[in-house]
Length: 289
Image (cartoon, rainbow, N blue to C red):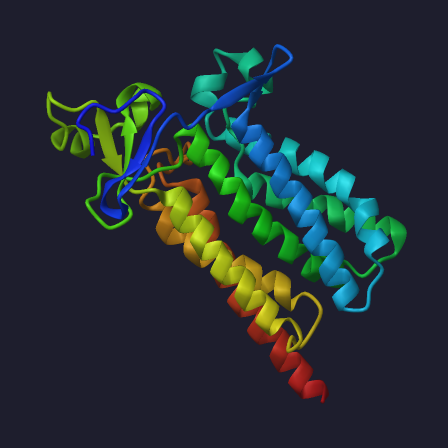
């Protein structure tokens, strides 16, 4: 591995991977297109295809999900941005126009999930659909969309963690990383002969975690005890992974009053909510049986 990395290069030294010229964007007919946006868009498309497939597999009408998809996509993007801006307000209060610029990232998954659930709830109330059944089906697309979406963080050189020398350690040229995310520990392990930091690729950890969660959800789907249980499995399963992965990140969104990582706290709360709700519903069903 070279001591001086190219500006656009990314390396995983212990895996023997050196990726040259990984683009953050590309140009089409003079228009600059961010890889982050392309990957997020592909994530939405694959999510819709998976949802349609699961709907058919479980005896539902796939067209019902295509109808609600456009609303969920729009409002989940808005929600993801608002969540990020709210917890990064110290930056955006002096740069209001930058609130509308998402080309460089700045979307928070939990904000999108919250907005998506609210949108689905309103849609199901209006159309008189089973909210919990719809939620179960959509979770498969959501979690796999997250598997793909995290690779947008990879091309953006963001969502990484503290210095590590583990198997999955990742090297990034310093000039491609926001200065506020370079910690004292990272600097300690740099030398004058190098131009990179070595970090934990938390985006990769989360992507791998979500693949495992997706498989678990597929295996459990036919054995669920009630509509809404897959939603609880997602909330608990994703929350469990996000809670420990968030602790590693150097770009955490912080609660203004407490100084605590907001997504980590929310993840822990959702794990507790999912477990308690599942137990309570199962006990009620057992009493009725």
